[in-house]
Amino acid sequence: MIKTREVKHIRTGMLCRVIKDDTHLTSQYNDYIVIKGPLGPTGYFVEGVNLKTLKNHHYAIDDLEEIYV
Image 1 (cartoon, rainbow, N blue to C red):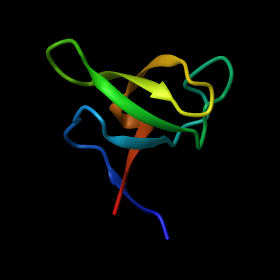
Image 2: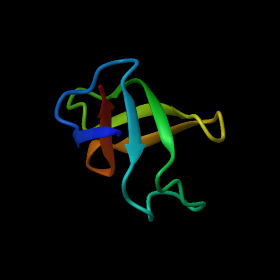
Image 3: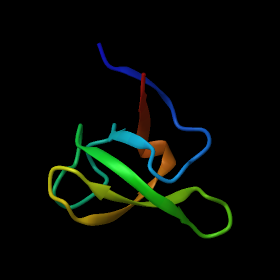
Image 4: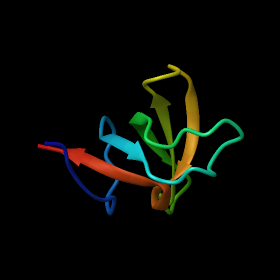
């Protein structure tokens, strides 16, 4: 069983899943991403690699949930 929780503190290398379907032109809903790091001083936006497309994208942390064990 996959355990998930709301993203509160972003860490480089964190595994997350996209939980909103209207974040990008081509939906990334339920795609897994690995966080590369925060964008800007607030950390509200992050850069990540989508593991399905292997492309970099920017995400708001409200659009993600953390996957953990």
